[in-house]
Amino acid sequence: MYAGVSSSLGSVILLLGGWLLYKLIRKRIIKKRKEKFFKKNGGLLLKQKLSSGEENVDKVVLFTLKELENATDNFNLNRILGKGGQGTVYKGMLVDGKIVAVKKFKVQGNTAEFINEFVVLNQINHRNVVKLLGCCLEDEVPLLVYEFIPNGNLYEHLHEQNEDLPMTWDMRLRIASEIAGALFYLHSIASQPIYHRDIKSTNILLDEKYRAKVADFGTSRIVSAEATHLTTVVQGTFGYLDPEYFQTSQFTDKSDVYSFGVVLVELLTGQKAISSIRSDEVRGLASFFVVCMEENQVFDIVDKRVLKEGEKEHIIAVANLAYRCLELNGRKRPTMKQVTLELEGIRRLDYWKGGSAQENFEEIELDRNEDNQLWDGYSYSNVSETLHTTTSSSRELSEVMPILKIK
Image (cartoon, rainbow, N blue to C red; front, top):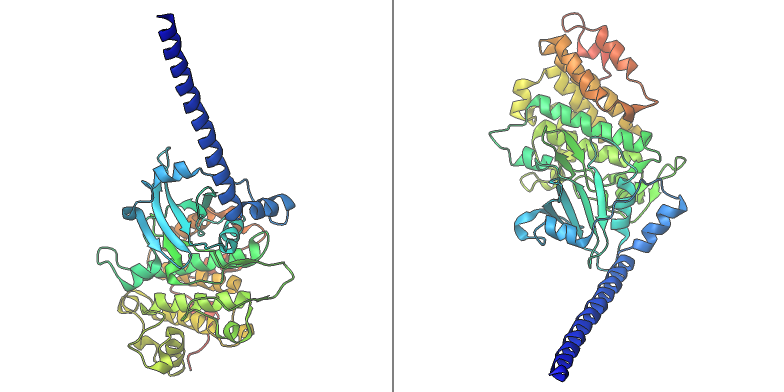
C-alpha cells in the first residue's frame, strides 16, 4: 500500500517538476526571443542614442507586446486605420480606457525610419503635432504608440468631402495657420531644428475639434542649428516635392515651405496635388496654380465655397502667400515664421470683417494662449499691434499685409 502511495506521489512530483521545467524553459525561450527582437528592431541603437545625450529625449515608455495585442484585439483587420509605405496603423484601447493608434512598421531589417521617428517625436511638444506615447520592441517588427486622432486626414476632408461637415473658409484658414505654426516650431523653436520632409494633406490629421495635427515623421531629420541643408537621397511625394531639392539632393527648411505651399493651394482650390484630368504640363497642382496666378485667372480655380464665404482680398492674400511658397528658387520663398505671421494676420483680419470683432479676437487669443509655452522667445506683438489699430471700416487688408500683386 505504502509502495503504491509513494509511487503515485513520485509520479505527481515528477509531473510537477516536468511542468515547472517546461515553464522555466518556455520563459527563457520567450525572453531570448524578446531580446532578439529588441536587438533586431534597433533597441541597442535606441539605447545608445538615449544614453549618449546626442538626442534630447524624454523618458521612454515601453509597452509590452501583450498590452498592444490586447489593445488591438490581436491586430484585428477591423481595427486598421490606414496603411502607408512605412507600415499599418491600428486603433487600440489600453487597459485604462485610453484610445491609441498603434503603428506596425514594415522593417525588413532596416530600422532607421523607426528609430528616426521615435527620436524626432520624443523631442517635440506642440499641440499641432501628433503626440508619441511610447513603443514596443518585442515583436518581429517595431511598434509605435500615438495619441488617437479621430477625424481622419485633411486629404479625405478636402477631396472626399462629407456634406455633413463641409470644409468652410474659416476651417481652411485655421488649419493652414495651425500647420504653418507647427512647421515654424519645428524649424525655429524646437531644441534642435527639424525638417519634416514629407508635408502633404494625407499627413495632416484632424482631431475631435478638427484641429490640425502634423504626422508621419519617418523621413524627418534633426539638424544642427548651424546647418543650412541636408544632402540626402531624394525622398518625398510626387506633387509635393520641392523641384530644387529634386535637382540638387539638398533639402532645406525652404523645401518644407514648398510642400506647405502645395497644401495651401489644396485648401484654396479643393483640387488634388496631382490630377490626370489636367494636361501633362500642369498635371501637378503647383504648376497649374502658378500658371493661373501669372495669367490672373486664380479665381477660376478657387473652390466655390471659398469664393462664397471668403473676403476677396483675404483670398488674394492667401493666394499670393502660396505663390511665394512655390517659388522655384528656394531663397525667394518666405520662412515658416513669415508664413505663420501672415496667416495669423489674415485670419485675425478675416474675423474682424466677419462681424463681432472683439469676441472673435478674444477667441483667437484664447486659442493661441492654450499653447503659449510653445512660443517662448517669440512675440506676436507686430500682428497684435496691427490688429488693435485696425478696424474693418477704417483700413483695408492691403494696407497692413504685404501682398504680391497678381501679374
